[in-house]
Length: 320
Image 1 (tube, rainbow, N blue to C red):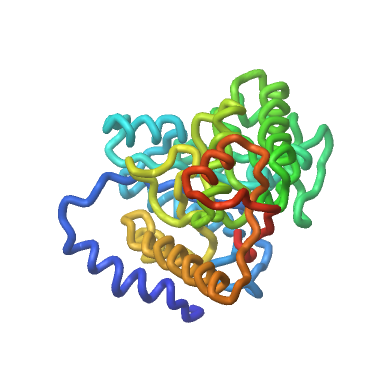
Image 2 (image 1 turned 90 degrees about the vertical axis):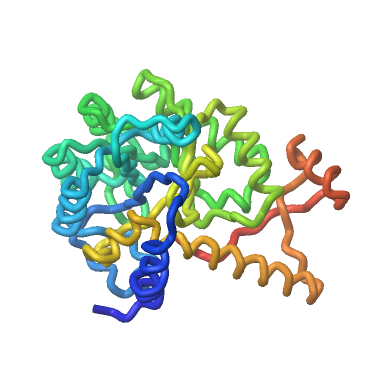
C-alpha cells in the first residue's frame, strides 16, 4: 500500500484523539464519488483519484450496511441537522459528481442490492439524447436519467459546462447555475433543489462565496455540496455542505475513520494553508484578484469591509 501522510494522521492521530473526546456535535457524512470503474488512475496521488472499482464500492456499501447506516437525501440531512430530527439512527448521503454512464452500469445495481439511494449531479452540457463524453468518459443520457429517477435516484445541478466558476463573470455564473437547473427540471418534470460546486471550493474567498450564495438562492436552490472535506453539521452552510471524498484507496480502516470524523482535520489544514498563502501574497504585493463588483452581495461586502470593489477572478489550484 502506498505511504500516505493523510492516512497516517487520520488513523494514528486524529481517530485516537476523537475516541477521547466526549459530547461531539452531531454530524452526517456526505460521501463524494465520481466514477465507478476498473479504469486505472494509479498515476495520481490517492487523494486526487476520482475512480472507485465496482468491487471496492460494493465493499464500502457493505460496510455502511453492517454499521447500520441508511441513506437519505440532502434535504433530509439538512432538515435533520437544523432541527435536530432524524429519520434514521445513522444517516448518510451518497453523492456522485459528473453524471458518468458507469453509475447506471455499476453503481446503481449495487445501491439497489443494499437498499440505498443516491444523488447524482449533472453537468447538463454533457447529458444528451445520445452518449456524450466528459473528461474522456461516457455520460448518462436523458433517457437513462429519467429511468434512474423512476427508481429513486435523485438528481441535482453540477452547472452546465463544469467550468472554474472563479474565472467567470457574475452573469456567466448566474447562467451556469440557472440554466442547468432549468434543463434538469424540464427533462425530469420536477423541482431541482440541489447544487454541487465543480472543482476546488474557494473556502477562504469570502466575497466570492457571498456572491455565489446569493446567486444560488436567487435561482431557487435549497441545499448544495462542495469539495470542502468533512462531515456536515448543524453549523454547516446548507448550500456549501462538506463532503468526504471516496475512491478505491479507501480501505476498511480509512473508510470507517472518515465516517467517524477522523478525516475532518483535512479541511482545517487546507484552510490554514490557503490563508498563509494569501498573507504571503499580500506581503509581496501580489493580491489575488477577486470576483467583479456586479452583484449586490459583493457590493455590500465591500462596503462592510471598507475595501475597494474587487476585480476579475482567477481559479485556485487543481483539485477534485
